[in-house]
Amino acid sequence: MTNQRKYPYAVHRVAAELTPIPHLQRAPYSGPTEPRRIVTDDGVSLAATLWRRGASRLVIICHGFAASQRTASIVWLAEHLAGPYDVLTFDWRGYGQSEGLATFGGAEAHDLAAVLTAAREWGYQRVVVVAESMGGLITLASLGAASNSADFPLPDAVATVSAPAAYELTGGLRPHLVRHVAPVSWLRPVAPLLGFRLGEVQPPTPLEVVERIRLPLLVIHGDRDTTVPVRNAYLLNERNPAISLRVYPGVDHAIVGMRARSPRLLLADLRALVEGE
Image (cartoon, rainbow, N blue to C red):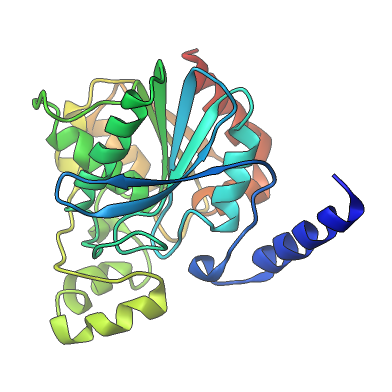
């Protein structure tokens, strides 16, 4: 790569890193990627990006609340996992370049099913989902609710990062936003200011169904998380003792918090899960 090509990449990367609002970040890709469109069974077209490296294993990365697949921390994780594995990132419905309206987790089960179906149709032998924050809530709730359904495609393993056990157990204003503000229809036009387009609110509760999940499940959390307190991870583990629980000391919320304080540990734990160790 010439210096002329490196310079614009570096400038755009720094600009994304310095943008404080996740959904406004547009981190550039450091290697070749393929844009994809994945259509759900209820007709919503999702924007996705495939980091194809010729691997038989695929990691699907699910972003969190008020973010997108172009958020700097999501791109960082994708580029550090790509190579040994292929990686797929995507925008949930109502986020980024995807169509549809966000529901805070209910209808997003269709998104997860569509992405997993596409992964199997593309021929990947092992598929692992890595889902942060709200993405983790959606993943846990969807897989738990579909545990007895032969129609819902399953990954081979799942890792969540800072996943809520329930919105009621999150910190700050989020529980009040979900319960009292989001259901008010005339306030929904304000949602794009937070990074998504909001429809009818359908918040699921992973804590009610996580015990039904039987596939390998790694729950990663920081003990300094103020957005989703670490109590959420312990509650999930109590409901499903088969969970592999990893609590990182001194770490705050989501992938951005892990990247800041324990990037090597996070990557090592995720790579071990993908390898089936």
